[in-house]
Image 1 (tube, rainbow, N blue to C red):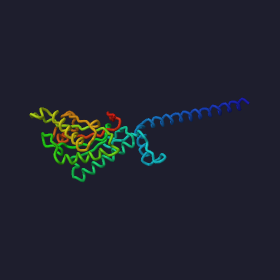
Image 2: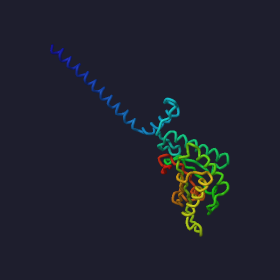
Image 3: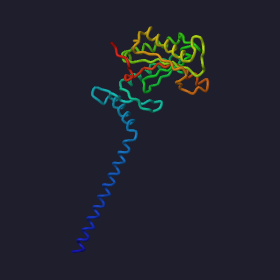
Image 4: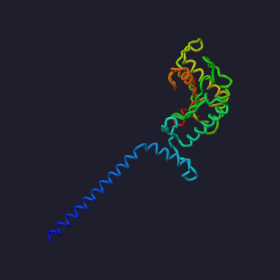
Length: 245
């Protein structure tokens, strides 16, 4: 009798040990799953939402609102309304196709960043060296961009025109420094868009940064040419600062 009780007690303890091992393994498994779920979860959700919107998962093909956009240049995530992101991508495609058709791929580029769409034009397409008067070719390019910006999906977007120079100093009667040159160049682009295309002056502004916002080190003629530029920035809705009457 004592032997049977002892055997029964041993069997019970063995079952409890097995159960405890199983619970411990399950706990480790769920902790491991949780740790995986925290890695790059934001990017995973962004990709998932992009697929859902593009495939029309919701009724009537409705796209997701407030889905982030993944910048292809540096794989960073930028928060965008999905429809707005699609509009910017379409605008970028228009500009790139236009540049390719005109043989200006090396002069005009586009990029979507946290502010919106940046249309970058090297200064030698728009201006002669040390001057701020727009070339005839520049007027053609700017008016084309203006045509797009007056379309329905872009007509309420705020636009920033930004002038930039390299570090080579300018000192003339009209342009005492690089600041004046960059500001007047940006202003001339703005005036053309406002006067020729009727873009509301409340949604467009001009800024000059001189040599202070380079996109490349000013250590070679090639890099300096990259820094001498005009950026036309189409801001996403979060950056709009004006209210129509």
